[in-house]
Image 1: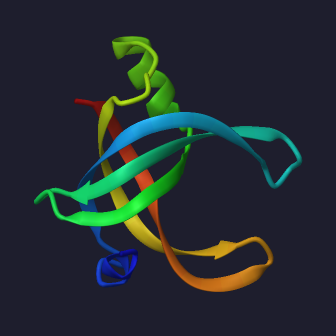
Image 2 (image 1 turned 30 degrees about the vertical axis):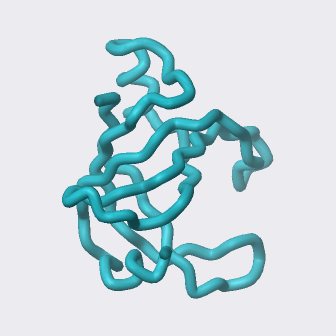
Image 3 (image 1 turned 90 degrees about the vertical axis):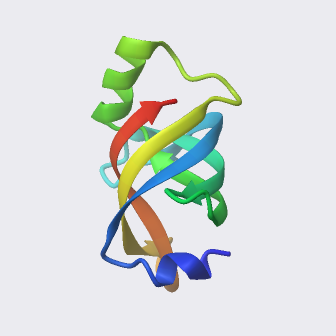
Length: 106
């Protein structure tokens, strides 16, 4: 299913996903960064893009939570994002990820 992201590389789009939970990852300076797990990612036309997606918990997320409260499992999240290639671990993988631009709970 992520193959659909390959055709979107370098473009911005509107997406939705269902919030599952938060997580953490080790940042490049050794600090612990908060992440979000979304499932059932769809494009602006409601077409499935991928089964799940991990996003960084950005300033936009914190601002949204201040306005609308903390995210709960099952919340549908609408966000604008740019699709980019990514590296997983130390190996280059021909994969895609979605770079978060704006986040709104719908």
